[in-house]
Image (cartoon, rainbow, N blue to C red):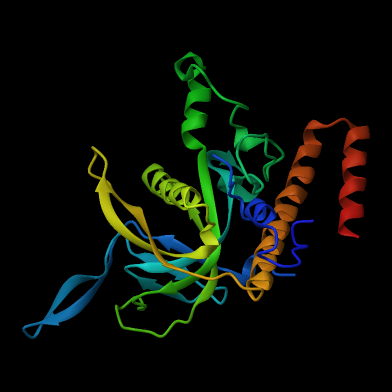
Length: 293
């Protein structure tokens, strides 16, 4: 089992596997804070020469953290220590019409160590509807399939410990925030590529991400329409010695991933029944009941 790690440094290969990185070439979801990069500035007012002026109190491409109690803080840069990474597909289905007039739904797959497999999603399908395997000729696909693939985002989920380098509230006022466990979904292409480059540089050193502090900053980019968005920039900071005290932290992240996947699989089983025969549906239902017990 993944969470049966006796001594964290005794088996580097097993540790790399748990973390979701390759050395070759109890806690629930609500217990973790979520770190995000904000794409638009947060505006406020400050007095300039005695007059109230509208200014960006939190700049675009800064980072926000939302804690389980709902409190939100910001920082232009953050320092993280990555313990684990996993991968998902996400897709927003804006055409969905649900009960009570609800419009739209977010599809998410289970968290996995790679995307090179079919992943069950929370609406009873696989890969959020994205075709399986490698697509050699994208243009040969039907237009609807092409659009669906564009809508389906690959997501790198990073879990670890985070420090806000210059913590502030929504008014730009300094606050004191201690180091905390977090997860972060990396979605946009540039940010994803930058994090991949960082992980590759660590692997070339024959080390693991947990051995480093990583400093995340941000820059603002734009698309031809003029819409701006934030991009994560990452660079290695100081090295960190891994100790047995980190074992419990790592196990908590493993438990969080397990709890998240269990929830998604339960939704998959519930929604997948609609496409099953009665006999198969009863079998799936019995399996879910056994797992719950």
